[in-house]
Length: 199
DNA sequence: CGTTGGATTGGCT
DNA sequence: GCCAATCCAACGC
Image (cartoon, rainbow, N blue to C red; front, top):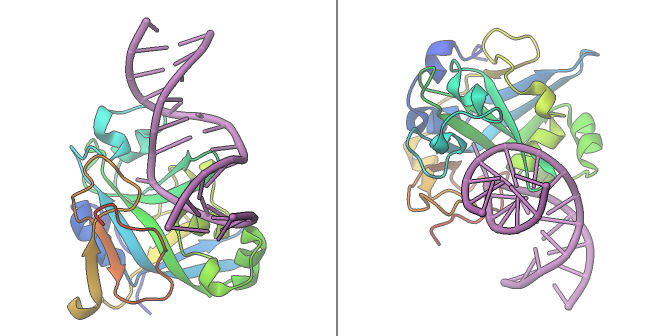
């Protein structure tokens, strides 16, 4: 099994980091030692000067982590119910990140099921709100360092072969909808049911 | 200070 | 497939 992704991995364009995160394993170690792990199968890139990005109108208290160093976790709240997890990418000051949208649960499924209030493995992490909920992630984890922190990190996985990598438009965005910056493992059953904005 | 709508989900038709 | 839930950040006055 490969090791933790280094700072240099995140310090690149989000359109590179997004597809490269597919197959990586998101890991969280809880205070009691319980380990949660899931294989990432869906991401979306939010670039500098991207009208769909929270960072588009400049830095605010909500999005300030996006403008910090790469390799940190940006967590935000939306739709009155849901927390979303992103990995900050690029260089400090740019305001760019990759949204973690779906993953295949590998370890700690009982805890994830309890967090989600659902049992089926396919329902645990198959959407950005679900993924954060399964991992017990809220605003309390905003800004956490994925490279040096002990709480959460991402392990490198085997690269996804080109034949198994699909690009689509992003889900739920209105501005910048035509940009094909959603990345999925083709045909993977753990991908979200969200519909791309382009169709 | 009031209004608007969102990087979604789950339950119901 | 459709739509309400739910609340806060952003923006306008």
